[in-house]
Length: 289
Ligand SMILES: O=P(O)(O)OC(CO)CO
Ligand SMILES: [Mg+2]
Ligand SMILES: [Mg+2]
Image (cartoon, rainbow, N blue to C red; front, side):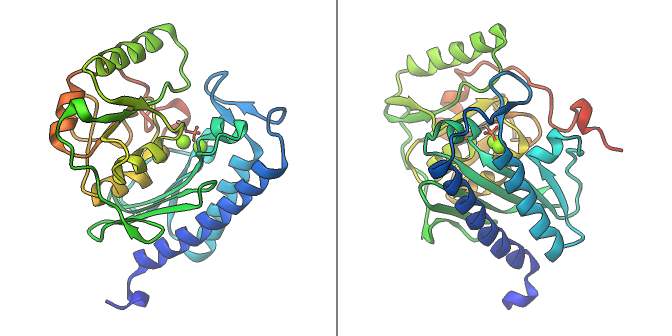
């Protein structure tokens, strides 16, 4: 099939270009502006947003709308300002303009521009641009995963005692949630595993699974825009996706396990506390019209 007859490829090429442009904007701000006095908060005192998050999301959506006028969007900052968070069967761009806003604010150098594309509720391709590192992670369903054009492959490790695990503390400081986070962490560390890491970006943790740097990433509290683009990068690199219950991943459920293989996934899932955040598609400001 020639490129001009492959509209999903045209869309993906557009995403790579606009993610790179977004990354340039992000780098420029990181290099020249102190964000600490400009930051605002959303769902909690530590759920941060900046003008750059909003600007980058606008840049992406406007550029896509002019090229693909019939496509739909789920964007983190648009949902935050009241847009619906519903994944229909229509072609839908799922956007996190800056995954790792806390890192961005603190100049901790792991921030990802995430653009996923779903049709019939299946993610067809994903683009995650690690803007400070200048790493472009891409994957299209059935066609492999790449970083700056080089193929990605998950780790072949099956022994959990030789594994590295990634997770995050999230932005919910409800003491009961914090207890559950530490309970899971305590059990995983005590297996023992070689180590626990966290990039501060759900998407970049998933890319770390895809490139074989960690065997598994788990978290409760993520959103669809954090994980949609990177989900296909993990599976195309040979990895598996699960809910923390052990069931199939549900992009809207706020729970994710991304692993190199079933053996590691099953072993770690057995140690995880299962708890729920409000679903992305059920939040009061996300109800369908
Ligand atoms: O920085 P963001 O986009 O709020 O995302 C966080 C999790 O919600 C890091 O993955
Ligand atoms: Mg995010
Ligand atoms: Mg974000």
